[in-house]
Image (cartoon, rainbow, N blue to C red; front, side, top):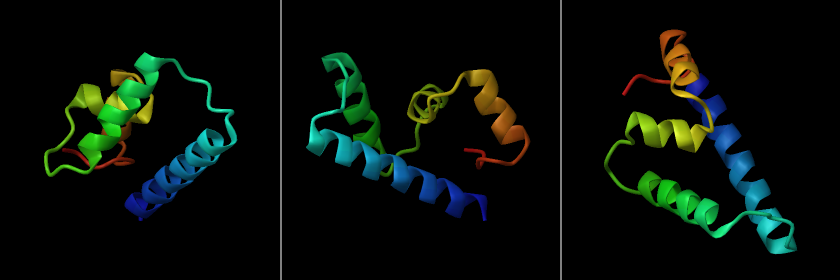
Length: 77
């Protein structure tokens, strides 16, 4: 159930980002764009994300990430 919620959230974020990019309102510097591309590229690989990559991808601290895992809100790797 939560996996479906996270997939929907990811879909919405990616869709909004694509719309913002297309309309020219996506305001990021080159480093942020490169980080985003790295994370998105890693999603399409068969390897799992490291905790650091997952935290960056989800835009949360390690302690918040650990809390989400403890509460079962995201799957444990």
